[in-house]
Image 1 (spheres, one colour):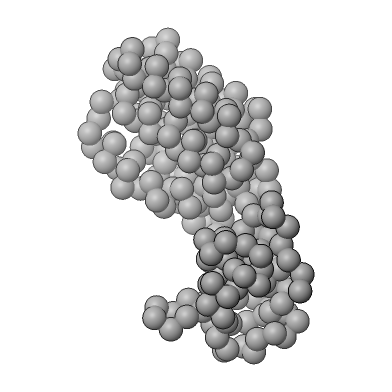
Image 2 (spheres, one colour):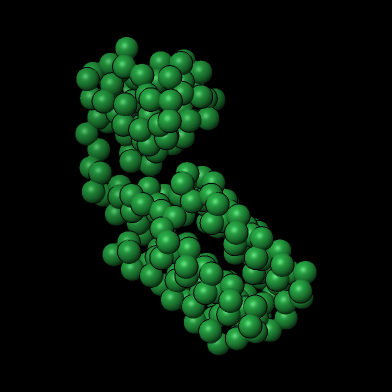
Length: 222
């Protein structure tokens, strides 16, 4: 049995699982083994197997039915349509982030304390150290942006950011998978510029740089 390499990510496990599906291992409408069995067969942990199932479900190939298990819907789903829907969903999330984070950046530039600025610098440095693996990159990126919202001293914006965090995290993860790259020097440099604008209390630059960053993310999905 072919095994996923130890360093593989969930999308590699999803591709291996898809290859088995297309080889006819399960019939359309049939039930797949449970996560524990699939994890063992693929040579990955349960969480990775669960994520691989989620990836294929998002492409319309599998369906998870509460209390019943995972079922094969089709081996020939149109990846173009599924990807188009995924891109549209990510764009909607970026639009919502823009509404929250541009104003937060402007307010943070105006209102931040020295302690909050230090915490934001630490979050930026942590982001810079965790750019290799998607999940860590997304988590440290979100921590940096949350630090900006905290420094804005706006309880409503913070509530909106936290309430939206789970959806934002998933959308950013999906976006990076679609794009096929992440954590580049240009991207991190943009975040450094946003930090410096906030640190220098340049309200206009903080808002403009944040808006430009999020708009660039959206453009890359066009």
